[in-house]
Image (cartoon, rainbow, N blue to C red):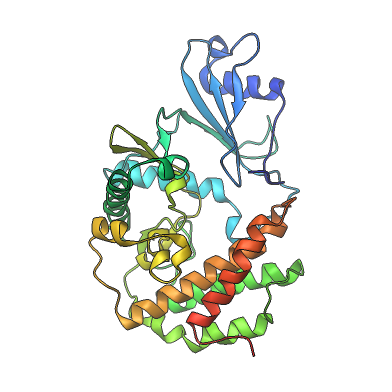
Length: 328
């Protein structure tokens, strides 16, 4: 996926990064030792073969001159902190971090190295798998996501803080940041921005039911799941984690918007019963938040085609309708 947030570097800079991380003896010679992994949407990632033949992945944060959405600021620091939490406090398989550099003296952004995971990306291969195998992976993902959500925080909000005892205050603030981002860049969301604000406010009391902050990934789609031999080998891309309501997780999106697929296997693995009426209202708010991001981020990413925007806009209308607001 092409995006102006991808901070590509020259071969010389890549060699310098490798030397800093692994030592001069591991700097590869010749050509063909680096290739870009093109599936991601935000950071640039390279698969690199070190001199001893080991494969690693290098992720580089966006350049500082490229404006990102408010919630994406400091995303790589969030990922590193989340990886540490998951490695030390859960059994969920996540990449090790070989080396991280935030000095900005080799390039203008944070970067880190991790081992290359020799496995299939579930988001890429899912449609080629028998339904039973695909569902089995989604059940495993539900169970892994539940374990991630078992980590409790001392308040709702960013991993680095500040945190707040009120999920209503935190989530409505998250949505407001997204709306302000859209207004700042003049993004046409198909609705008056204040109309969206009024819909969120009208249903915000459903958020008060959430009183226990849990670590949530938010971005845990099948495209961030690596699978091998019938099992999840690794979960990647943890840069959008925060302490919130587990129902905001991606696996529950299909409970309200069918275009996101059947949530039943994920929910079985998670151990989630049918949603209550209040939970459904919350999940609809979370769908609205997601669709706002999917529409607005197309401008921030500098997309050269309208495919994502054209897909997301009708589903933003659908999310508004689920919350009782339809076009006159």
